[in-house]
Length: 208
Image (spheres, one colour):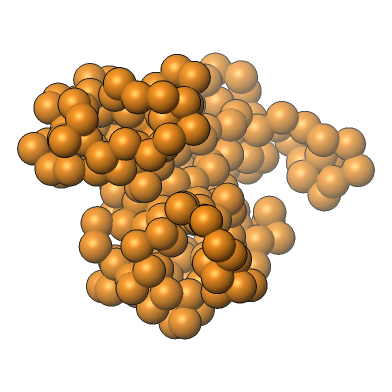
């Protein structure tokens, strides 16, 4: 499907919106490594970095498989960007299990993490489990949010002084690696720009 989309005339950029870690194939990685229009960014829902919690969530991958998928991509794609969704405070999540999630986030080096405190949903198995106190979920959210900001800044800093391509929108835009960018340009155009500085995870660039 990706190859068919890339064959469309006039397509300047293609980005996958979301894919499970266990769905990443070698041909997909090879295409991302060789096709400049295929954005080197993967949104891989994580939810938790602990195997027991992942089983309780009925996820189809484990910690080892998730990390291995990211490593396979990083071996062949230059400076890939990984983003993820994470749920904090899942029923029964222990402090150690939360630390396992923090550890996976550090090891992958996500460029962005979408964080959600667990909220009970009727009809699910988890809804029958005792919920964690709100203060615990709030503290874990705070800690992961702090880490996420540090990881975003660290990843963005790799591109200082380098040229990137920004798809300009009404208010800023996004690079091919899904970094939020500030650069002058007409909306709906792709601008080649040099990164001058990074502020709060957002790059500021000037047209190259």
